[in-house]
Length: 390
Image (cartoon, rainbow, N blue to C red; front, top):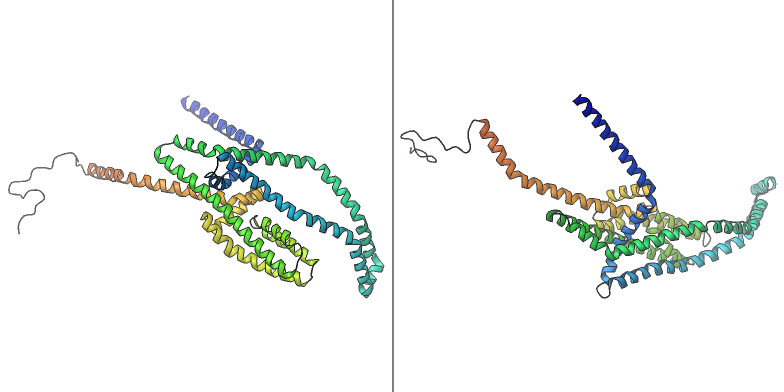
């Protein structure tokens, strides 16, 4: 009967544990969006803590946070003012010139016998010209669709404001919260946790600085190459390269493709070929020389771990996951090193007691009492510890 009750109790405990885990996972699924916002806020707070601490030397912490936030808002605004007007102008010019492009294609087809035969059979250029004339009206329809997407923009702004508010609270009081939590721990554990927190913060700050340095190098070199090729609007294109280069793995490729499309309308095929060759060579240098060197010095993570972490992060959270994957990998590495050091210290502390226990076991197994006095020596025998004379 007792075994039967024990079996039922074990089954009930197992079922309750499974149900509890399932409920926890379901709750995490329900609050996945706030948790994602919180994760972004933590990353931003750690990344912005370095400039806030620097400005805090000369002003109050609240003013330092406000100054950093002002820069955080002004920099994207300046980038948008630099990029958006030329893009809108060129898009408008392209739409207005499409009928002329269609007419040029028709003239070229009329001069070629093969194309003229295809044109007479299928009226390809005439259809292209009709589509080109209808394109401005379709752009107006697209504007109507953009107006319908206003709710999505409002939700995004709400998420951005919420993340910025959370980040401000963490910048203002986050360090005190961490210190109070660490103060509740035992002394040995508190020292290690404080070391982990400091090293993780340094790793995130160094990672952000390294990414900005890498993107700056890419943007400056792209501006130089575009200047040599005589491409107009090279400053906005260089800024676009800078922004896209912040995205690991695919950002630089996307930027190179966009600029390559622009060069097609400027000086084809010379500018396009030169830019393509330059992009391929530079990406190889960046992926194999610049990025590993910068990230290894910044976060001290092996390049293979960097690649694997970025792939996993991009699969789980998209672009955001790719951005935070490397500092997360650095933090996990720091925690693993501290845990390994703690295990090594525990083993060193346990070795003397283990040796004493092994010695006591060997004496007990031979029938000797370690606390007993040695037996008296027979008459004429030398004292213990001495050897008889030869």
